[in-house]
Length: 246
View 1 (tube, rainbow, N blue to C red):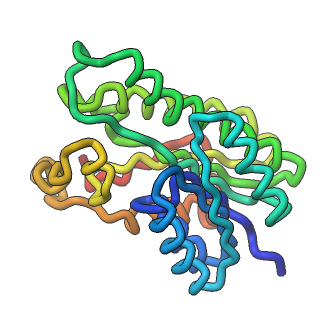
View 2 (cartoon, rainbow, N blue to C red):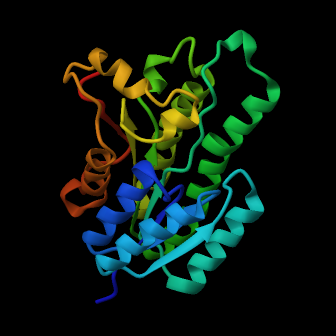
């Protein structure tokens, strides 16, 4: 039998890499994208290949529509099908107050986290609808309801937009046999905190979590793979918190 194909954007490290490895272990072939860290992407791909997956590693900045088109062209040529999308690529800026936000920062944040993610999902739908099946998982954030005041209000706003996009898209494509869900991670121990200029943030704030600890990327990936599975066949349009109760 042909293995199903999963596209994972931003799959070089963190939640994306954990999803790639777990999806490979669960029987998927993988199209894995990265923007800057080629070495990490290749390391993730090697682990996925060790699990039996065929893996295509694709450089793509989802803020650039032309690169999204090129990404899908390579996926089509390599696999000829798309069964699942984990819409994970995203960025966060350094902690700041809203009064200090610039147009340049907001433009970049929304180009990657919202516009790029929506275009990636739209292209996935065009490939899935003719087959009458497929799943899309949008990686959002608990920040969408917490607001992230004095830290990342712009990031939180992009993730709130993706929560609404998840619901709207799911309603559009459910009659065609497609399911669209969101995963909202909380304080997860990944390098996104370092990219935001605060590498110790997750550990420092873990006391705010009812479970009194940070989560792992693989705990998030387990939730993603469950939503992609037949065990979640009557779930669409909703976003699942993976937050330790926060």
